[in-house]
Amino acid sequence: MSNEIAAEEWKPRINPWLASIPLMGAAFMFVLDETIANVALPYMAGSFSISRQESMWILTSYLVASGIVIPMVGWFSKVMGRKNFFMLSIAIFSCASFLCGISKSNEMMILSRILQGIGGGGLLPIAQACLLENFEPQVRGKAMAMFGLVVVIAPIIGPIVGGWLTINWSWPYIYFINIPIGIISLILAKQLIEDPPYARRQAGVKTDFVGFFFLFLWLVTLQVVLDKGNDLDWFGSKFITRLSIISVIALIVFVISQIKNKHPLVDLSVLKDKNYFIGTFVQVVMQGVMLASMAILPQFLQSMMGYDAFLSGITMMPRGLGALIALVFCGQLANKVDNRWLVALGLALMGIAGWILGFLNLEISSLNVEVPNFIFGLGMGFAMVPIISLSVMTISNEQMTNASGLQNLLKIIGGAIGTSIVSTMISRFSQIHQYMLVGKLHPLNDIFNQKLQAYSSMFMTNVDPHTASYLGQNLLYNEMIQQSTLWAFIDSFRIYAVACIIIIPLVFLVKTFKK
Image (cartoon, rainbow, N blue to C red; front, top):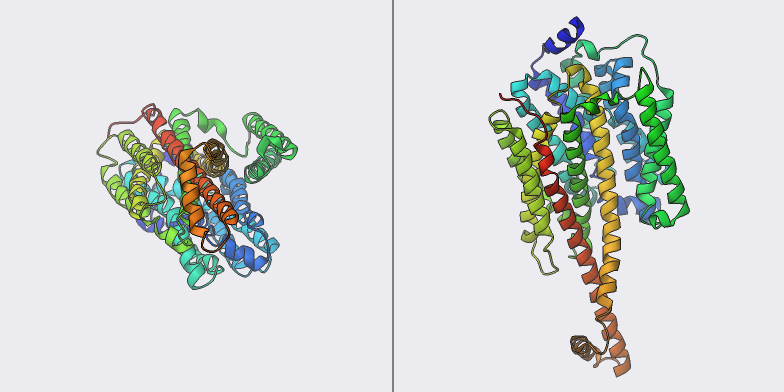
């Protein structure tokens, strides 16, 4: 009991605002690299002479590796000491970034990205745990606003920075920029970060090899299913079906092993905490919506509106501006109002932005995308910081590292599932709308005949009437494909808007305390 009291009463000797500099730098690197490579994939695919589909492994290998390490942060912290593990993670991430930049083949790039994910897996949960521990409860709102600034804005500016570096320099520089940030963060971490008593190196820490094996098996098979499911027709493929069964079994065995093991790899008992469980679930949904929208909106602008990679990234900038403004207000309001209302406001704004995007057409200006993006950014800023604080409000400092690691793992999985689902929705919804629209393209439809005659007359001066009619029909069919794809994007935006709205009542099930 005395150890628990000492743990709760521990205070850092160094100013926590100074100690937050290396924490924010390391977290920024990790989150930025989740999205910075998206716009550079075609260039990397050309350099390695691979297909776009094969280049997707450059993204997924990073997520899988970091996903495996994140729940093990608590165990590594006990074995090495949290500060030592944090510094080692920064060093590995920086070295791996250099290897990514000098890669000459897809195989070398994937191995480097795996190493980068291994190094980056511990950065975000340790940064979150340290910030929550270093600051007094009445100041945590401002500290988490700063943390939210990184978590929300870094993935938003990732495509912008990646597009600019790729076009003006070359794609290796999207990885080289991590090196100076990593070096500075490593030096400052050595000087400014200190471990509380419960986060120092412990003797006799046991290794849960069974838990590690099934965690690895679950995440690897899940990621392959999410990446290849849509291409292979999901459960219409025996390969995907068998892999899904293996993934589910691995998950079940992993959970059972963690519950029964006296020294588990991940302490799942934190999920019994009502605040933590509900808060984590809300964050998972938000992460899925955010990454999914960031995946399909640039795709819509590039494939449907003719924007280039950099211009589509610039169109996402208002989202970052909105998040920045919201985070400033959150820092001031966190200890003055009920944080649940801030989260509800943020989710409502995200839903409104998604619904506005659900009314896009092919004759819009960039302003029609930038305004809802700004509203979406406001929503992310208002919701993200308070929900993190609420979710860990009843978690002890001693459990904070484990809770942060598990929470970030689930958020990564939520983001991967959200991105995978939206890719499938675009594909399937476009097929559904194509089936609905193709029934209108027949000679008994007067509008079809008028359009066909108008398009055919355009080609009459250069070709014979039969060829002109054929070209007119082809032009009409292409318009139908374009409209069906547009409706697929519209349906997807609306579904994610509804997802944000329906989880608002869950927020008020979270307990809060009067300041």
